[in-house]
Length: 599
Image (cartoon, rainbow, N blue to C red; front, side, top):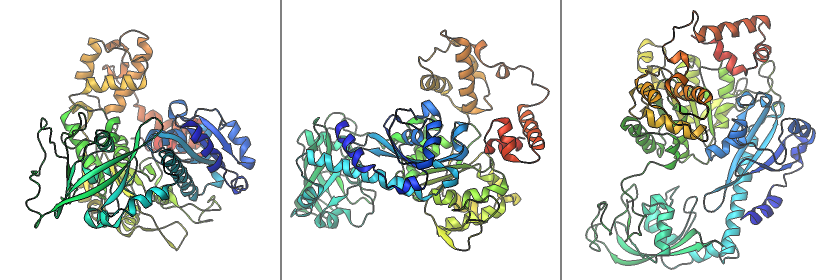
């Protein structure tokens, strides 16, 4: 696989010389975030070298925090990290678009990225990056099929499309992309997206196990029963990456009744003739004697939610509901206190949705000054205001096109922007600042708030029409104090962020159980990091937890007051220049605005 990828990298990533003229770099990293090659860059090359955007550098989130390459690996989806959204302050002057590259098994093998200075920022780079990544995936796919005995994809497509019976190609990653007319008429119909899960009611590994065992399951529609023949496509390591599926009709069914004597409905866990779920419309169902390990019990929560630890019943129910609604196009509203993990839920929903191959874009509406929020969301035309870029900006709505937009703390959005957002949600159109021409963007919206939106609507502080437009589905995330799995969560956080993970002593366990945790999971995570530093190699005990959460007397001024006063003092000392004040404090502008808004 490495040699194949190396050759493809040489061929596909020779980006046009235009990149040098635009002073941006095309970068490719391996699946761990280590940069393998740089292309063009022109005058930007020197800046790239200074920030260590060089071959051999590690740009994983573990090494550099939030950045396009590392975050694309963590999220397994295209991302945009613009300016101060970077974790490292020295990268606040850069824009980065990155897209992961998957092989035919669905494994992340590389990341393609375009990075440049903010004055050269253009949202169209996002499309360039996604297109290049798709092209490489298509080439890797073609090479795998060639090694399986097909000289090109066209030969395999002809084998499927010329079959006299319904036939299709199921691949480990992606939808059913090759099928003949007989298969379309029999059960695919005009569905825009059909994959192994929706067609057969089982994931690809389970279907591949059946193919390797030589099973010939039955597949039922309302009108007929088919015997299914499964021919796996194997790579050089004998791993299946695709299955050619042929459907041989056994008998006809009258008005959807009767049939081959196989009862509808799910079987019990011990039934070897287990049935797998039908298509959402109830039109078809595949049945077979499943190999050990291939049987499903209930509807599993997608793997994208694995990052959210939970054994508490209420949190598990929140995950289940979120996973259920993720498959729909409904806008979603996450209702939770600060620090409970709203963005974790939003990212999991995105990765489990039909928008997973698009970008995930997030903004905290409460962390951006109202005067700037409009331009951040809707973008601006060239010259729309003093300091506006020459190319203008499509804004976050444009950046989220084809993906998911998370508006955190949406209750803080000013009323005029609420009206503009409502129009964008109704028909997908919006206008940039200073631009009379409408633009369009299609995205899945997720709103999040810790406020009581219903009460705000009654008071007139939040538009009722926007509220009902957002309220397609709502998910409540319980606060940490109400969760029964606090100890398990604490151990999971230690395992995730500290190696080797220290042991929780009995006194620490008792305190974690009894403490109110007003800061929720964020407070628990910080408390554990504090304790690890004090405990060293020994077990964590109560005395290692921060004094402020052990009931110490509160200071004369709260932390919020101290932060707000420090921010205001820096602004006064900079004569109102926000950028200069942020530099004096060593924080991003977004952080400074957040400090000024502390209550």
